[in-house]
Length: 318
Image 1: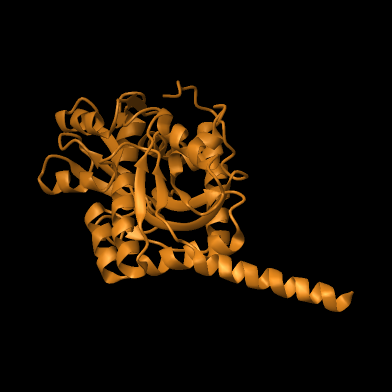
Image 2: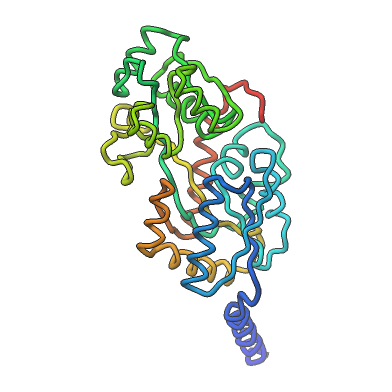
């Protein structure tokens, strides 16, 4: 009986090895829960090229936008757990929305098998040039002298840009006013025109500052950005402040562990080249690559952080 059981275990181990070796034998569908043209979609396009060149894998990007990323994320959670449907998850649907009272048709922790963080990008705090703000200390002093008069734009309620501002308010104990817009473009335009004073935006807004149309004050990471090292981090003035947008690869929860391990190793290798790092830098982000366990811990920590930020907010979910 013991010999028989040992033989069964050997057969099972061989079957798992063959399973991993045979994967993938057809194109892999990568779900992007946002429209084409955005930052997550740009990451997807970089990945498709990198995986094709480094491993010969064929990734087919499938955009399923809507409901702040909820539609595509739910679709990926319910997909067959065979390794042929992957999700590009982001802070919005995978950490911010789960921290709210919104009823989701998926569980951001239980319904997914995290594989790896792919890239991350710090946000930048910019101000209209007419405002007497050149440093974070200037902003704090101005807002303290004018409570309820300083405004900041965002891409909409519960966007990363919105919560970056709310997080700043909490850390600095300020009374500044959030003005939501329908997307990042209109929010930038509002700040360019002086309709709002501040904007916490993606890396592209720093280029507006180099043209003199906005004034870049600081970045939102825990330390200075490698892409914009000339800008201080807000955390240098307010220790503990940290906001970043991130993109990571996840699979449906019950995807076999050998497939998860194989996808992880292949993706991390693909994004470790100088060429991919340069492509991410042009897009304003930097490659990460971590273990499934580290990515799982990251998601849980993000949800806990956003729960503290979102808890007292009374906003309409877009």
